Amino acid sequence: MQPSLFSQTPEDLAVLLEGLGEPSYRATQILEWLWQKRSASIEEMSNLPARLRDHLKENFTLRSLTPARSQGSLDSTRKFLFRLHDGRYVECVLIPASPALYGERSDRRTLCVSSQVGCAFGCKFCASGLDGFTRDLTADEIAGQVLLAEELSGEKVNNIVFMGMGEPLANLSQLLKALELITAPWGLGIGARRLTVSTSGLVPQIRKLADHPQQIRLAISLHGASDEVRDRIMPINRKWPVSELFKALRYWTERKKQTITLEYILIDDVNADLAQATLLAQRAKSVQAKVNLIPYNTVEGLPWKRPDEPRCRAFRDALVKSGIPATLRLEKGHDIDAACGQLRLKEERAERKDVT
Ligand code: SAH
Ligand code: SF4
Image (tube, rainbow, N blue to C red; front, side, top):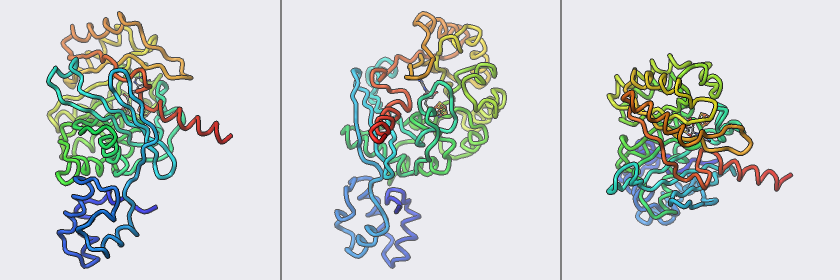
């Protein structure tokens, strides 16, 4: 499989062009065709000499994803399913500005992107991990989700969360390259502060990312404030327990001087009791984090349930009373299976049924 032209940085192109005896300004022209004009074919790149176009056509592909399905939801969240060159699927979700969360004048359009096909971490509540891990996405497949979502929706994305399928920090080299494609002025030009990487708690990689110069944001899928609760639902906690995780988070805040978000899904009879709220408040305070509470989204085939609304509110109120900034997320896209991994799982299972 040839690489996509979209994976090429100015430095990569400089080496290529020099080898071909082409002037260096061709790199700027190629990048403009790709990222600004959003070319559909290499043939279209009319200011490049024919011999260069031929070379590019022979050695590179252009699009690494094609649209497979899109679903709209009642609150105008849109979910896209994209097909990769090897027949696998990834999904992403476009979430329009939410006046409730960001104020009436917000123009925020957030895209939730995937970083892997499947996930190896096997959290017990999560659809992405159900069928295990298939492969990492390449940087151009990650950034390509943004290009394609913009093309299909006709809207410019200005905020990205790495909260789709997969564990972004388990695919760190391609993630870092994707961050370059997404933030570069010649690429998508989205500011690093508008990118949030979410992780289930890969401690060494959190430290590495803390040393990375870009001011990207970090969200932690915590879902339990004690080892007892996290061990039960997130196998990764046996490798890096809560105390290790919070040491890494302190390192992050020292390096980046920015607020971390702790994501906390509320699951009935697992983590939604007030004793956990008290512990969570202590943990959040220790790294000056804010907390996003999300009532659990039921997954077919899994036993977990969301607590009733009064319990969710009581949990939030307990945090707020302890001085922790906490939001109870009014869910977007619940009616279209917006939680990670669910749409893709349905598609792949349906295909398997077709085959057998
Ligand atoms: N692997 C990374 C990135 C994926 S983020 C991580 O875990 O952080 C996807 C988020 O959705 C995670 O916080 C995950 O815990 C959460 N999630 C998974 N299944 C869910 C469900 N059924 N309902 C609500 N949130 C869910
Ligand atoms: Fe993987 Fe994150 Fe789902 Fe856990 S929550 S299985 S790490 S995608």
